[in-house]
Image (cartoon, rainbow, N blue to C red):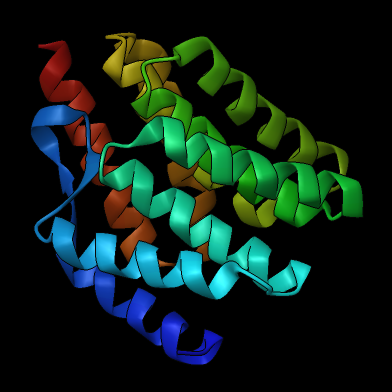
Length: 189
């Protein structure tokens, strides 16, 4: 098994991942066994990998562990990613890792820590003028707020994300945010 093959396998996993409306659009899987198999292969491949490959693999592992509702283990891998990105002064990776780590803390019901990481991502986006991930940080922060039934604040985050995504012109991202807006309005009523 090599990195290229594993990347292809990771892309294929998206067909087994969905957003659960009954749980504030948390990511779930229809095939836990496939996700676990991928995690096992990625862990094995990460041993002896160079730092860049390990960053990529640990990010994948952390995300999938979160989806499998193993957030504490996910936090371990995603914390490594964030520390690595910070040590490298790679602000883009730091933003991505902060968002991923925020999600893992959300899945672990550590909401304040989750907000800290989403806010850190937003701060880094603004400070370093890295606009590509601001909408993602807002979307994930909004979902966290929605879980806490802070519907007005959640909708504000979603509306801001929607504005950014409309400028990007990516219809699947626009649809994702619109789904979140529709759900938060439904939950509010």
